[in-house]
Image 1 (cartoon, rainbow, N blue to C red):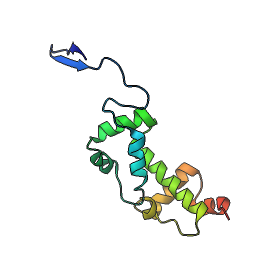
Image 2: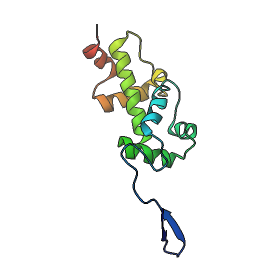
Image 3: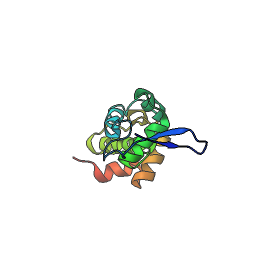
Image 4: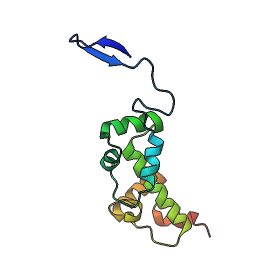
Length: 131
């Protein structure tokens, strides 16, 4: 490590080199973090819950996701939930319940689904249902 001085003259540590692709300074892998979260989509999982599970701050988690996945944890989680809803609409006859994909209400599910997919869940099922 090299030592630099802050504006107030106090030493500050800085790493000699930047981390390589797929790693962060803390060494955690956002992709592995995302896999853990993805397996729990049907639970009321929040970004704070994910950060707490990993014993990091929400800001650290946000940096990891931005560096490695190019998005925020919240945006990733929402996209993953809509993707899961799409899968359920395509592969099952079951009604897609918001709670099953981790959203708090049917209104939230419809709103986010429409924003990301451009149609309603019902119209999506009619168009893309695998028979």
